[in-house]
Length: 319
Ligand SMILES: Nc1ncnc2c1ncn2[C@@H]1O[C@H](COP(=O)(O)OP(=O)(O)OP(=O)(O)O)[C@@H](O)[C@H]1O
Ligand SMILES: O=P(O)(O)OC[C@H]1O[C@](O)(CO)[C@@H](O)[C@@H]1O
Image (cartoon, rainbow, N blue to C red; front, side, top):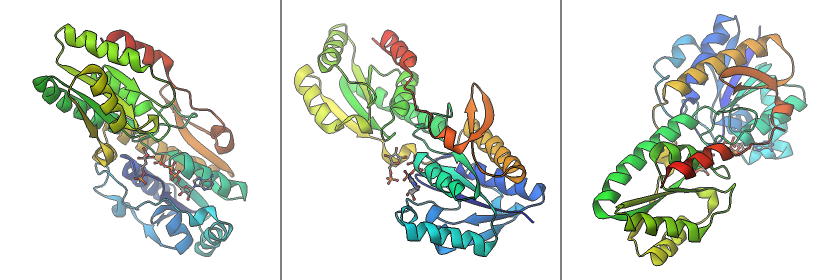
């Protein structure tokens, strides 16, 4: 009997529950037992594990967060914690493990594969910072949430003739800023991958103001610097009353959109099909619209590349 374990790890992301549901139901469909490991690698170390049945995952596809809980586990990064996790897998007879999470979580999964555990990693993170997949699950829901927030901020900014610096998440990746900047019609984005020309940003705002423009929205990725400091300097240089909005967890929670539900369902199903038929370590991803499976070691070597073309388009069409 194959026993599949599933855990979610790192920052939660919209779509985690769609993956848990797809893994559970696909696993049972293909004749395996499925076990939910609570709170990511922490639950794996502590043996906080429960068997999942078809109805355990009812009514969750539309919910944000993760019904299994998640964590950032320092203990898993220690030799003792890691060995304890291996012992728990052995004690429970869990011979296949599916890990949903971001870059760090999948690196943890690769470590497990390196010592002989069959694993499949599923990219689940709002940051979209994994190079081997065009999109990680949760990213587009977060971008939609940020875009809706920009629309609201734009209304009130326009009414008052102000500027607003909107700080978004993404750790060292500027994709949330880039995609929401395009979709929300922001004047500028500031991302960690690129330097920014402060004088150019100021000039653009002043030219816009002189043309009669009553709003100026700048999306600043959290990894690109201090948004409050930037706002003060921008206000000083332009004379435009400037506010800061830090979106925080608003952009990580919430019901997953259609794309994240579909990616979660198809990737979860593919992870199960693959893990039941192959030994070793793999990761699922999406390239050019197609869901595929890759060696996890190779996948994690692929560098994340910033989309300069999209950045250029933003510059051309935001005046
Ligand atoms: N290099 C590594 N080797 C082994 N385990 C790791 C490694 N990096 C991270 N982990 C484990 O994965 C957990 C989650 O990693 P991290 O906090 O980086 O989040 P993440 O998976 O990148 O998700 P998110 O993108 O949402 O932040 C860590 O707390 C740790 O237990
Ligand atoms: O969950 P925490 O510890 O607040 O972490 C926040 C970080 O997690 C993410 O939301 C997802 O990786 C990042 O964008 C952000 O920097």
